[in-house]
Image (tube, rainbow, N blue to C red):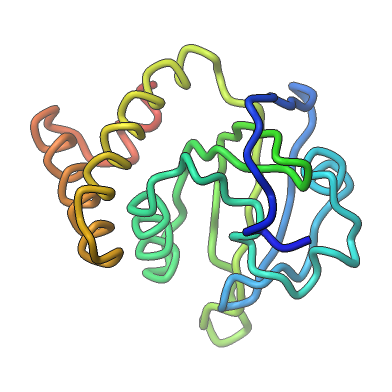
Length: 174
């Protein structure tokens, strides 16, 4: 089953408040490790995810510019926190509050990425969902995908600027 053949369903899945979804990827974002919580909530077997792009669980409701911000941040050797809507193998969705960090080798070079995800606060999702809809709408106004992603990113930067906050401060204020 390819990601393209999975149709999103309006069916939410959740995981325990004390559970932590953990995954690791290589430099290209291919999954090298997924814990049991990840596999259970995403409805995959380990053999189905190892070596696959982490984007295999990306929900189409997610603005691409959020992933641009994420990749720009972790490739700059900095951690990032983000609210992410993921999609299961059956098309259901689940929200996470993700903490993504680069992993380093003994020489200080990035050797991969590590993500821990927890259940997000419902109040935070009520605030982030309209923003994500606005970003996706901006992205979809552009015929060329890269231009759309950049326009969404610029919209996000403008929103943060008007609020006078950096991204990290914004995310932690939700």
